[in-house]
Image 1 (tube, rainbow, N blue to C red):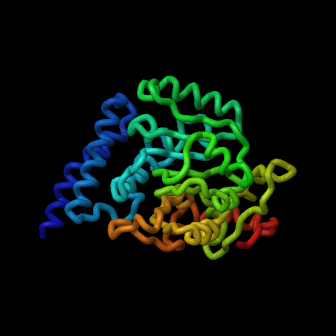
Image 2: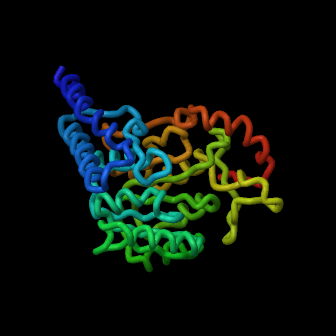
Image 3: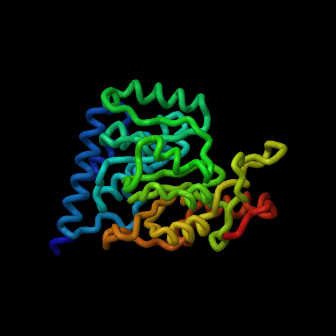
Amino acid sequence: MLKKLLMKILRRVMLPLFEALTHRTQTPSVNQQIQTSLMTQWILAKRQNVKVFSEIQDAGFRCYSEFEEDGIILYLLSLIDARDRTVVEMCCGSGDECMAANLIINHGFKGHLFEGDKFRVRNAKNFFSRQKDCRCVKPNITHAWITKSNVNDLIKASGVAGEVDVFSLDVDGNDYHIWEAVDVIQPRICVFETHDIVPTDLAVTVPYSDDFVAMDKTGAEKDFRSASLAAMDKLSRSKGYTLVGSHKHGFNVFYVRNDLLNQFLPRPTLESIHDNEWTRDGQKNRWPLVKEFPWVEV
């Protein structure tokens, strides 16, 4: 009865906060206050042994992420605690729409961002330089083409090693091979983009090439790229991580390091991650067009 009562109270408190976050007219300071209040409610619920969400996507909201990953990341951090407030992101784009921006701007995280396109790097530096909350400490933004042979050196050169709170990887190509090579950091939370057009039972990736680009010779087909959910799950489990959920479309997935798992974190199946309209449509209509490409089984 006490848990049910607490859940009712939490929902009454959190609903207005979620609704407020959907209004883009909020000032940065108000946005920060709302997010801090939301995290406080989640932390208090955990202390009262109350599981707020059965699926992490229910905690989602967008501030700077493309979809609802900003909220999911904060929810996961409220369940396992942030340690050094550091985020590493590979392929950050122009900075204004990425996994790290909300943590850097609204929560004081130190960012170590990497991007292979020099124009996006310039835009990212301009974006963060305009943020009042980054005037004293700016994120480290590195222009580099990431390969499995240079990834650890790039991370170390950025000034980070060991445990980090969040690691995001989305390079639309050698994702599997890059994650396999990373050993200089031990993330607490990992966010990966997987290629959900690949059937759930196939653990496949593109063959490794330093200069891999997600496009065939005609430039018409970009779906031969990245790695399947089964492939990234197999690799992540071998590195000591457990799948805890995804965003609503099922291709951005979240892992937590095994020593941090607790009863509040769900353990979804791969099939449940792919049980959504976007993924079903992709596996039906897009996978047949590329299934004969030279995928590598792992």
